[in-house]
Image (cartoon, rainbow, N blue to C red; front, side, top):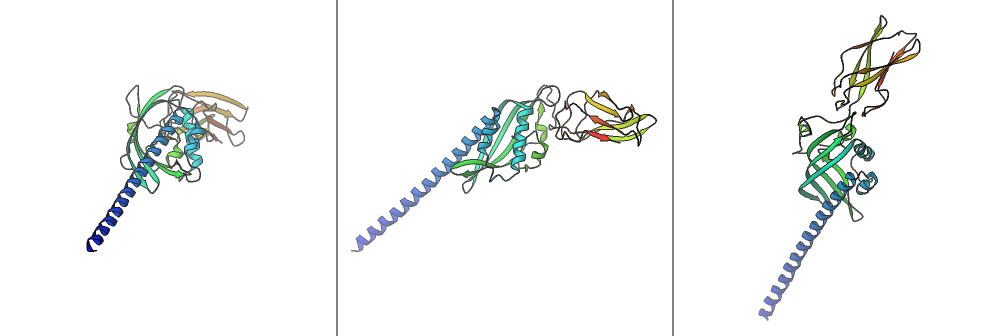
Length: 284
């Protein structure tokens, strides 16, 4: 009787241990399957981005659960596809961490693309380290947050403000012009005008770049509207304006006073792609 009791206890313990072991194996397999799903979704998103298919790209983004500004991200992706022509993308998954069913995908990457800002294409090489957060929605993983270097949405200054930094991400100097090897701070310019004075038959003003990207066209058009005639005179500033800087005072012949008024408009024909196209004029 005693031997039978010992054998029964041993068998029960074996069953429990084996069940626990099988449960652990099931959890491990399940986690591996989720990691594989996230990896697959990320690769498919890269393909739709490279194909410039914004509608298919956003099939992998959860509008309801997206933590950041969904519409701002949508606009940033559309802008990327207008001003960047991707040449090649290499990615290396550094690690995948979990939060329940959610998955954090950490990726190192290098991207070569043509920036069509300005009048000529500039080939850019950018390296980065980014974190992508995916959540399971109806059995499918979808993107709900981005952090680190801007793998997607790089062209939009407003979107970049939405993206938090992470440890280990690359500095902006990792972005270089391929033909020269010179590091640049890429982004869109934002051209404005400041009228300083109008006296003695001349108007004095500066052209300003309030954006985070330099102009690259080599020249910038502007117009002076003479309220007394009225007439519009077109001119060209034969240089670029770096981000956050202004030209020295520019003067042009102009009949202006409280009666005649007038204005100065920079880039009147929208030849330069800007982050804000609505603030290009200053008036008396």
